[in-house]
Structure formats: C-alpha cells, structure tokens
Amino acid sequence: MPLDALAVGNDAIADVLDEIGDLIELKGENVFRAVTYRAAARSIRDLREPLTKLVAEKRLREIPRVGPAVAEAIEQLVTTGTSKRYAELQAAVPPGLLTLLRVPGVGPATARIIYDNLKITTIEELEEAARDHRLQQLPKIQAKTEENILRSIAALKQRTGRSLLHEARAAADEMVAYLRERTGLERIAIAGSLRRYRETIGDVDLVVASDAAAPIMAAFVAAPTVERILAQGDTKSSVVVGRGLQIDLRVVSPSAYGAALLYFTGSKEHNVRLRGIALRRKLLLNEYGLYRVGAEARGQEIASATEEDVYAALEMDWIPPELREDRGEIDAAREHRLPTLVRVSDIRGDLHTHTNWTDGRDPLVDMARRAKAKGYAYLAVTDHSPGLGMTNGLSPERIAARMTEAAKLNAELAPFRILVGTEVDIRANGKLDYPDEILARFDIVSASVHSSFAQTREQMTARVTGAMRHPLVTAVSHPTGRLLEKREPHAIDLDALIAAATQTGTWIEVNGGPERLDLPDTWIRKAIDHGATLVLNSDAHAIEELEWMDLAAGTARRGWASVTPIANARGLDAMLASRKKRP
Ligand code: DGT
Ligand code: CA
Ligand code: CA
Ligand code: ZN
Image (cartoon, rainbow, N blue to C red; front, side, top):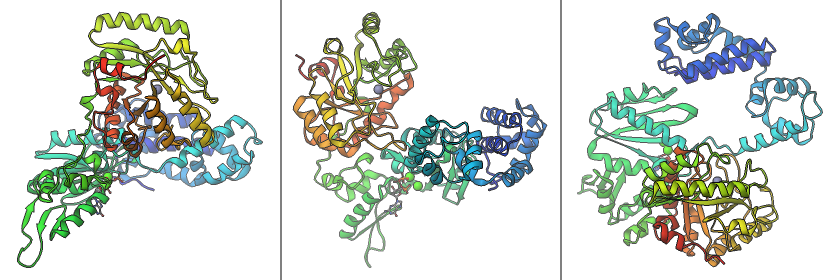
C-alpha cells in the first residue's frame, strides 16, 4: 500500500526501509544489501529534521549510512509514497512470507525454510504446524525454536491493538506540550479512556478550548510525531503517531469546554446514564451543553462552561474521571457519598523496587536518591530471591552486603529510610524460595509467582493463599500474573485470595507496572469492601520507573480507593506497625 505521500514522517519511511531489508533477505538476495537498508533506517530514526525537508534541499546524502541506492528509494518514497525497488520486491516475494516474519523468533531464513517446505503463509497455519511438531522436522529448525514460535503466537493473539497506558500518556503529553507551545490555545485537556486511567487505550482524545480552530487544526496535523493523517476537519481531526496510536483532537468554544470535556471523557456508559437522568428532568445533555427542552424553553442553556457546572445542574457532586464507568458512581454522587480518592501525592513510599543487583538497571544509591527527591519518606528495595528463572537472585552473603550498604546510605539520607526487603518467589509447590531465618531479616517480604502459570485454579489458589498464611510474608505481589496485551491472568480464585488477605493481615499489591496494573480495578474495590489492606507499588527496575506509582494510584482510584486501606499512604512508623504481626 503506498504511503500517503504528504503525511509521511521519518518513522514511517524508516519502517519501509526495514521492510525492504526483510524483503531482500526473503527473496534470497545478498544479505549485505539488506543490512544497508536497515542501517539507513536506524540513521533516519535518529534524525532531527523531517525527511521531506532534506529531500527538498537535496541533502539526503548527508544522512549517515545513506548511499546512492537508498537515497533514491527514500526520495521516491517521500515524493510518491512508494519506490521502484520496494514495488519490485513486493512483487517478487509471496505476501505470506512477511506475515510469518511478524512472529517474534521467526527471522527471514526461518521464514524461507518454512515457506519452501510447507508452503505456510498464515499465522494460523504456522501454529498448527508447530503444534503437530512439523517445524522441527525441517532442516535447521530445532524443537526449542518451535516452542518459541508457539509462545510468540500465543502472545500475538493476546494483542487487541490497544495501547498500554504509559505509551498513550507519553504520546499525548508530547502532543499537548507541542500544541501549547505552537498555538494560542486557551485550554487543552486529555479526555477519553486515558483521562479515566483505563488499563489499555484505544485512542487518545484531546479537547481544546479556543475561538480560532483553524490554526490549531493546522498545527496538530503538522506535528513532528504525526505519521499519518486520518481526517482533517474544521474543528475535529485525527492522526496516527508512532506505533499506530491514534489521536483525536476537537476544538470547542471556551463557553462549551466543560460540556465537551465531560462528553469526550466518557465512558460512553456513564454518558448514557447521565443523559437519561437529564431527560427525566426535561433537560438535554450533549457535547455542547445542558439545555432545557420543550416548546416554551427554546433550548435555553443551563450549564456548559465547566464540568462542575454540569454535574451541579444535575444535582450531583463532580465525579472523578476514574469513576466514570457506570459502576454506581452516579447514585453515589447524587447522595454525596463518593469516596475521597487516594492521590499519588498521598503515597509516602514505594515498597517494591529492583536494582542492578538482580534484574534492575540502576544501583540502590540512585534509586534511593530519586525516591527521596520525589518526596518519599521511605523506599523498600525488594530484589529477587534466587529461585527458578531469577537471574542473579540474592544469596545470604549478598543480602548481608545489601544490609550494610543500606545502613550506610540511611546515615547519609536520614530521615529518609531505605528498607531492605525481598520479592520472594512462591515455588510451584507453594514453598517460599528462602528459609524462615533469612525471611526474618527483611523489613518487607513480598511474595509472588513467576513460574508454573499453567497450574489448575485449585493448585494456584492454594499455592498463593498458602504463602499469604506464612507469618513472615508482608504482601502478595501482582496477584493475577496478567501481562496486558501479552498474557492472560493465571487461573486463581481472587475471592479466596481476598479472604486470606483479611484473615491474615497480608497486604495485596496494586502493581503500577504498565503491563500489569495488578490487582485489577474491579477487584481492588472488592478487596476494599472486604476490609483488605492494599499496597501501591511501582515495581520499578530503573529510576524513571518510580513514576509508575502514578499508574498504581490511578488503578486504585478506579477501584474507589481512599487513603484509608493503603499501607504506604501511611508514614514510616505507622506503615511498619500495620504489617502482619511477626512471630
Ligand atoms: P477507548 O478509546 O476505546 O480507549 O475508549 P474511550 O472511552 O476513549 O472511547 P472513544 O475514544 O471512542 O470516545 C471518547 C469518548 O466520547 C467516550 O468515552 C464517550 C464519548 N462517546 C463516544 N461515542 C459515544 C456515543 O456513541 N455515545 C455517547 N454518549 N458518548 C460517546
Ligand atoms: Ca479514546
Ligand atoms: Ca476517540
Ligand atoms: Zn518485582
């Protein structure tokens, strides 16, 4: 498919060059030529100027690793949307081969072998062949490769095309910053599922208040991150930025900003219910405002400037976006009994983090300094136990060294406190990966499952609740094991897990890792209703990932959480005192 020539960005061109590289290899041409195209693609991703500009100024050869052939292809791609070389390759290579390449673990050579021998061109056929062990009978394909292919296909099937929250947030923030700088807009807000902190995002919705829409529309579609324009109108446009993420932008008059924000924040179910309530009062609610209907009323406007105005006119309290899912929030708002939701600024410390001693990137000193700079009172470092699959898990000697390191840093950073904890593996048989005398040395023991996910619901429930009954276990981490867009939650009885939490005083984690967001929101609400204590964690493996606490807080807010049930919304002493009683 030719690219939309006027709208192509550098990343889109780089993607095509990578694809040309793949096609060259699939066709069986000299691998060196494929390498040339891929090297050029890398250079282009690092460019600080648009290719369209370089083409116009005939400066393509200034790009590192771009020779005459590649420059010609780029010029054709930028001006016509395709290139001669690209078209020839596409004609020469069966289209199914590229499909096979989409499966991680299948490179061009493997794809060739599979296609030549089995004539496979779809992922379904590939899966069937792998199940029947027909792949490992082929030359140069091992049983291990076949297993990897099956696992990759399972992961591909989990993908819905929705984006993870942090990716959508980064793209939205970048666009908002750009529009603020470039245009004279009055107000701009992120609306839609992103404002509601839904766990995955279909597309990003932006609402702008301005009386002059045209320059904002023009700036939006010309933003540097834009790869493709889907629609461009007078007050509404849609674009695609990196990784296929769509951004919708609407410009509304400042007087209707509140009504528009309310409408485009959704959810649709929340909107439908609000509209029903309005209608019963002979009022019409839409994205422009709240109006009186009926012959004599003549569409008289009641409210529209702010969300608060609209909710107030419907005789309810303003509803935080995270609650707008039609899960009882409207009745609660009418009866003035919405919870005061926890804010990320209420969190006093992070109790699940990793360093470069196991699978993290940064040393403890950097993690601690960043945590202190964020305003935290404490940070627990919870590197892994040595168990199955854990690279470099901490031995007793290294735990002792870590205690010494932490004591030294604590002297320097006081009153900030580093707590030495562990993320201890719950083995398949339910046993913890450290003996009790070692567990007893840690301030925080977080237990979690990292293996044998395929156990039955009964086995998994017994395994996890058994660990929770251990007197030295402070918390259970990422309880469902789901990886959004990648892996289903494992089978586990969460009602039983919540019951075990309340009986034993074990905390349940709300993990803010953007792939996890685990415990999920609806279960958070149940856990709170049953009196369980939660702990909000980032599970950071690098200093900047400490910011993922925001996602944990957003998820907890979607679960109607106030500060009350949250262990790490408490100061150091109160938090430590609220741990399960130790023997
Ligand atoms: P997403 O994009 O799938 O993650 O979820 P949303 O909630 O961002 O949905 P989106 O982008 O289709 O629409 C944004 C908001 O616009 C949505 O939350 C509510 C409002 N909206 C969209 N379509 C309708 C509709 O047919 N009826 C009503 N009442 N509201 C709608
Ligand atoms: Ca959306
Ligand atoms: Ca949308
Ligand atoms: Zn972890």
